[in-house]
Image (tube, rainbow, N blue to C red; front, top):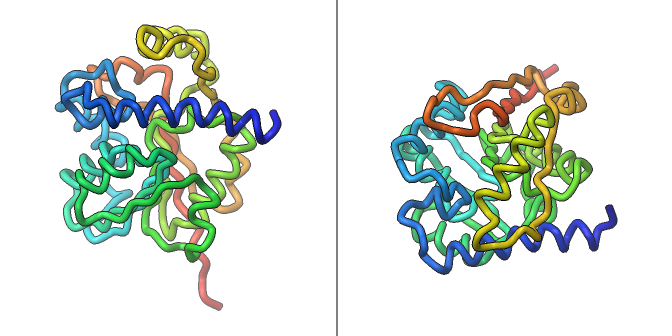
Length: 238
């Protein structure tokens, strides 16, 4: 896939999320973030809590979200772990404007990785997260570039959540059409699916790479999606 094609496909999703942020159609932030079919904010809270685990994000941490949208994920993280310094980047200006309102003391910017963050120092954040965004990336090559930049920015851990598993591609594609089809049409790019074995290419940079399925019964997509947690390899002084 050439760069112009990748850019065009990515812009289609950016436009959709920008419209959702502007129109104010939904009651909850997570619905503006693409979780349109999830009406219960309690389920969203449980999903986020399970995703981040009990030790990956700690009070006082600097947390950066790639594809932060309107700030739904970070807002919920902030309610679970207090005293965080929150930052994020998203391609949609409308989404970033809402994120700045929703998290007034955060730092948010419009852009895409790695261009938007290339001036940031390595290890600028304790934890770098990305929730339910990788399915919108146009190719595995782009995904690899994004992961490498997330690892560069992180001093300790990287969490990439809601990754679509290749094993369930047919089911996920059907769900996608059901969720997005009525209003936004069926011309949106297909989701990107990634198998767990793909992540092995980052092993040299990590102390550990672990996978888990969100253990929240009311989360309907828990079977076909997974969370990747990457613990950075610490460089020891010599």
